Length: 54
Image (cartoon, rainbow, N blue to C red; front, side, top):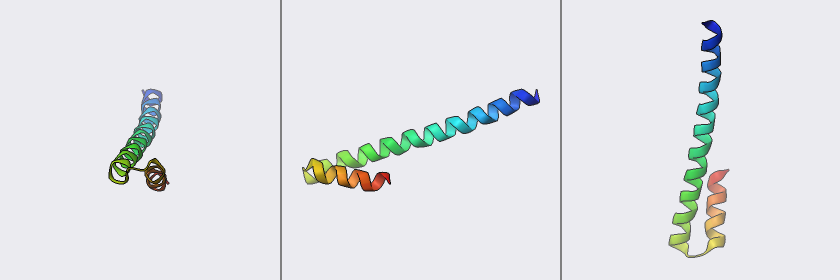
């Protein structure tokens, strides 16, 4: 039983990290799209999205 719990904890942590990263990417893309709609310039939208990503 202890071995299974350790595997579940490790899997849970990995899933949590993957989930956080995927939401980070989605948020960055959303910011870029909104910036593009506001500015009308892909260069500025990419700059704003890039700043938000890091």
